[in-house]
Image (cartoon, rainbow, N blue to C red; front, side, top):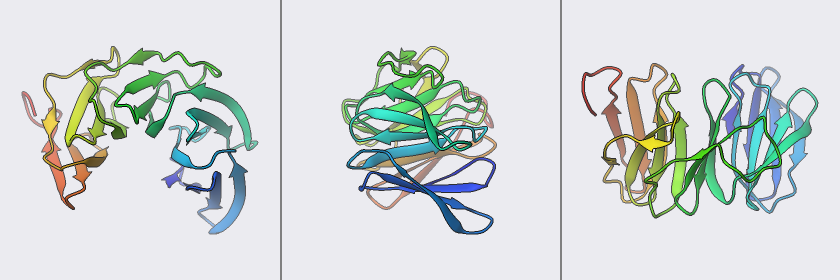
Length: 203
């Protein structure tokens, strides 16, 4: 599920290849999108609410316009578990089921070429990705129980990785001010780190 940043829409998808849209003001369903896949693996709105990215199980991410509810582009991202827009909307990150983390230009459609790959990705699937509010960090939660951090500008990793000790890390999120990073795993626990934004030095 995902809310549009302007708060006007709520999108939900699952294993039946459809995305459902509700108007949050009226609480009425206003649209059903048939994405043509057996299931949807991820969906997210762009920061300006002008695009809805839908990652299909076939490895194709469709970009829909909420203004017309038409597909404006497609990106061949490969099988992924999650997608996320950068705060400025110029990059789309994908969390690969093969352990890859890639960054794409959402305005260039119909291509299988990523803007850049993030190096030192885990060997197990990456469950979720999230940008920091200032766009300076990209975090990825992996099924090996680690949380990795990259610089989106060049795809290079920050030194080391955060051992979440979660068994399998399922999701990751930054606080709105960027001062905290949280990860949740299959042991029913949540780990929280104070980021360098609010503390001098490392993590």
